Image 1: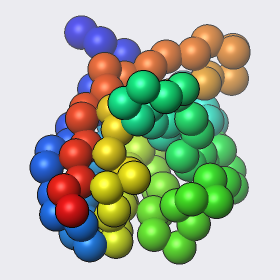
Image 2: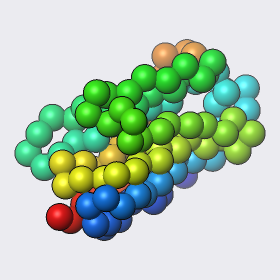
Image 3: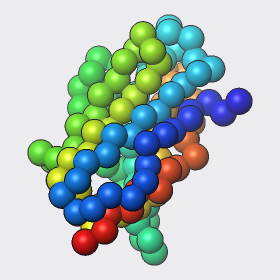
Image 4: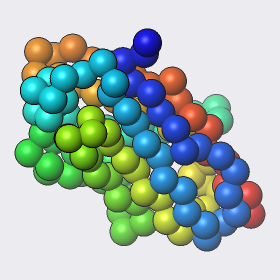
Length: 119
């Protein structure tokens, strides 16, 4: 079983919303809760880029391109991280990856669901 399992990608029209979920089924609470979680994306033909991150203490950071539109959150009791994406536009089309960095420094990536925004 994978360390991180993502869901929620798909096709949406411009102006629409999607929520991505990232589950860490193999984590125990004491491992997940202090870990840093982040979402990255890789648009077609471009480099992977940071979209948003949330630390174990729930401090958040957003890329300028998504500020005010995307919200990252986490539910430690469920060992889940989320990315709520609103007001989507075609430039948000990408493969989205969940990333976890544990206190030990161990780093894990999700499989990357596709998000496609049509104009």
